[in-house]
Image 1 (tube, rainbow, N blue to C red):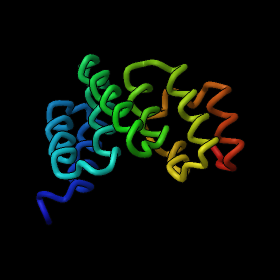
Image 2: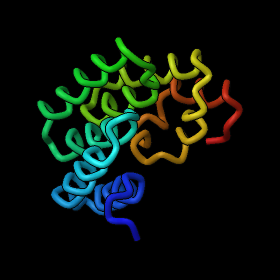
Image 3: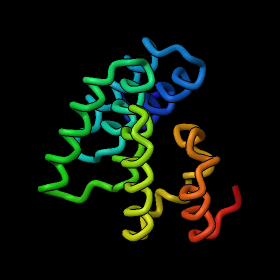
Length: 137
C-alpha cells in the first residue's frame, strides 16, 4: 500500500525475477534500494537481479559497494553470496555461505527456500552447510 516501502518493492522485484521479467525486476529492486540505504539487503538483491539479467558489470559494482560498506559496518556474508551466485561464481558464493555459517547468520534459515541458491542445491558443500544448520533440503 505504501509505494515507498522498500520490502514490498524488493519482494515485487524478486517476483518479477522469478517470472523472468528482468526489466521490471530491476526497476523494482532499484526503487527498493533507493527507499532503503541503511541496510545491505536491497542492494544485494539488486546485485543478484543485475547478474541474473546479464548485467554482470553492474553486479560487480554492487559487490564493490558491499565491500566498501563492510569496512564501516556489518554486511552479512549471505548478502555477498546472493550476488556471487548470481554472477555464477559458485566458489565465492559457497565461501560466503560458509562465512555466514561461521557468523551464525540467521539469514541462512532461508538458504534452502531462497530460489537464488537453487543452482547450488546439488553441490556437496551446499548440502553440508544445510546439514550443519539443521535444515532439510
